Image 1 (cartoon, rainbow, N blue to C red):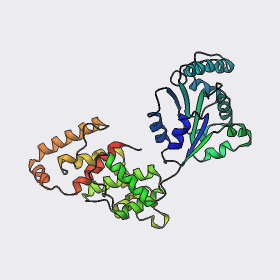
Image 2: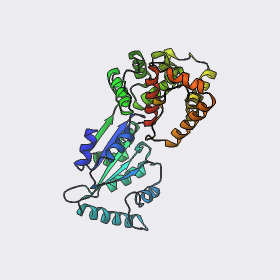
Image 3: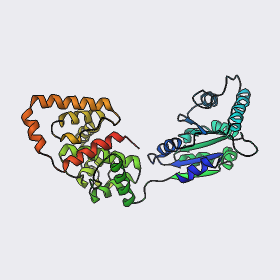
Image 4: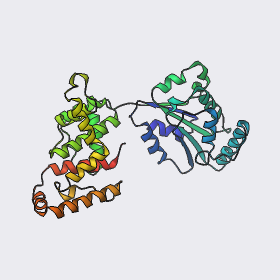
Length: 335
């Protein structure tokens, strides 16, 4: 992130960011966009599979570079130059971010090279950031794109987490960010398996932890152990090859149904009267409509069986912290 931030702040003309699926490229870009100086105007393109004409129509729209009406490519480039020059004279910088750039055609990439020509005597008037999967490197190595490749001023590579220790710190930081009071909810052996199954990829870590917390909550577990993670990983075909095949196809289908969004709502409804009130999701988190639904279900269940509700309130254990962790982790969404 430091390299990317430096590249933007120092006005590098063309920056390339690559990383495997799920390593957090888009998340990092959005994080960076939200922290840039107000003088930086950002245009974000996330659907690169288009023709040259469609590409120019899109980037010139009011939502992106906001170029006045044009009839031809030459007129577009002329007016775009005027827009960029006006912004530059007012101390503003313009950044065009193209996500999933490995899907760009060579023809569109050649047009991007032309756009990189916009500059003043002292600085680039249009900074361009291309981000994509590792295949983007192969795309840029094509002989017909050698001129574009030579213009790359900075390359950044986002790698998976390399060690179990870093994976453990990542999980702990997410738990703390979600409001958990404990960071030892996942046992060391569970973290070890999460690292091996996810290969250190944050999105996979999130998915495994999310569903492991859900499974542990449903089982009333005090901590998330290796057995829970193994069950979740097997369901999503993430186990190392030597450990696969412990569930039948029917069992996997049942587990997948529980793990989907509808299944989660059913689980909250079924368990509404079983958890201490303090583990319910807070009203200030995203998805308030779902929170209201869960609270309504709780009231209905309490009305049907006050004896069971009173009994449940006495049954508070360390499992409450696990369910608290799940509800808050789940509210954070995918990083």
